[in-house]
Image 1 (cartoon, helix red, strand yellow):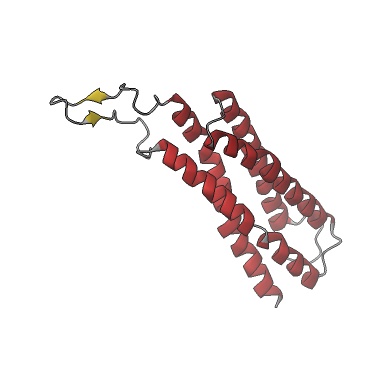
Image 2 (cartoon, one colour; image 1 turned 90 degrees about the horizontal axis):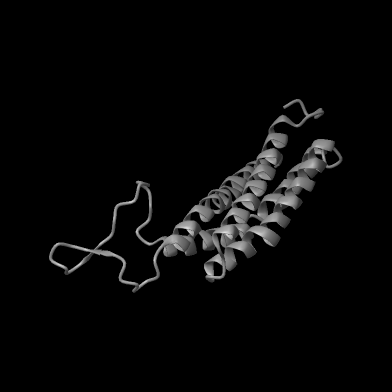
Length: 174
């Protein structure tokens, strides 16, 4: 049963937390592109030779989306949905730790505290900042602050991941 719980815990972390960390990291640069883009209908797009279709200049980024605003909304939705799904990670983590008898170990207590802090950073800083930008109320300065919040969130998760693997002081033999 312990192996099953551990497998679900790890898979949930990969499937739920992974998309949030990637989408949250991609969000600030896309938001900057959206803020830098001319307003729709401003007539600033270059026209083709026959003046029939606007020509959108090629981006330096080969992976750039055709619709940065749409990409921004998609990244925001990924962050919100997977943040909720991510609740299963600590649930199965507690179940696994209980079965392994390590609930009192320092590495686990530290991991729990960092996980809680990461959840607070996501819920109180990252998602509200994304909401502001998606709703059109942000500035380039907001994107810089959001990038910092996202970096802190990702650093917390990276630290938790390392603690889960290294487990300093663990006597479980793995």
